[in-house]
Picture 1 (cartoon, rainbow, N blue to C red):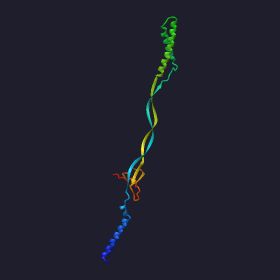
Picture 2: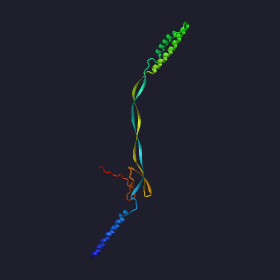
Picture 3: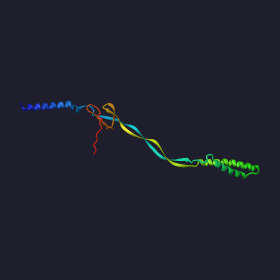
Picture 4: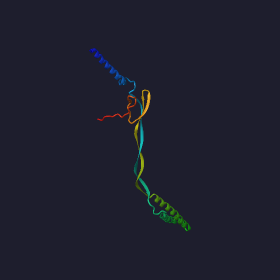
Length: 185
């Protein structure tokens, strides 16, 4: 065998191997299949969480003092005596007696009313703690609804992280949605 023939056979084998590699695995290099899906929109999916808690505050409470004379007898008696004395100063004869009786009646009524008013306004204040349950609200992101397009074909997916502007595709045209690992320094 001559050398040129051996060289020719070697070149032939090399070229055939190259063509086979390109035909099987290398076709991917020349493929028109997209490598990325274009992200059209991203909408966060949120959940509102309500947490109950006790909210307490000190409030001023006004109380009515206990009444010792509920029927205002003391006020009525003192008013009647004062009214009778005052009414006795007017008139003469039977008129004096009528003025005394009228003064006693008016004084008794007035004394009763004055004592009732004083008892109603006789108050004291205390501070009391009042509590109620209130709801604190917070939002938790559950994921992201993503609208995307591969070529002219639209699609939707829910992801657990917010994607970039493009989502990579595998060899079969499926989305690769794994969370990218970031290295910390």
